[in-house]
Amino acid sequence: AFKFQVWPGASDKLLFYFQGGGACWDEESTKLGLCTTYSSPSSNAGVFCRDNCAGSNPFIDYTIVQVLYCSGDAHVGQVVRDYTAHDKNGENVSQQGAANVQATLDWVKSQDGFFEKLSSLVLMGCSAGSLGV
Image (cartoon, rainbow, N blue to C red; front, side):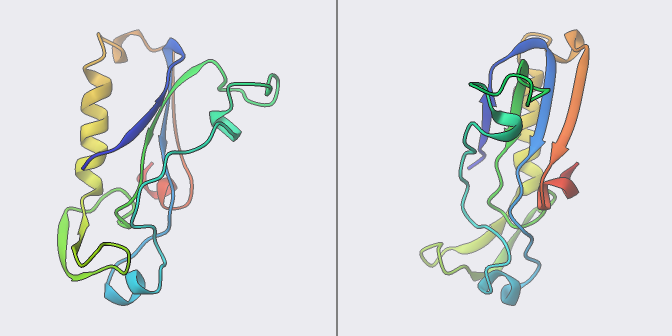
């Protein structure tokens, strides 16, 4: 399943954000919990703040598209592992970050010429998301 989150804003300003959550590269790092294996939308805080944050958020009027993160692969994986994670109900770990990013970009590109109208494009990420940038 591919997941992303959108905060509508100006049609000519886009903040494309890669959510963080650590990184896992093998069974041991996954079982130690060095990465998230579930997606969770962000709250309206920091760059996502839309209310009561005038002056503190330079991106308050931007459309924000956030690639949600649950794969532990720094948004670049394309593999199903031969081991499971403790919170996946016995399912093998599937690291499909690259496909999730592509699905999100495809959605943005499908939004009535959105890219062609941009006066400002910001790429941003946190933790493993900074590697996605």
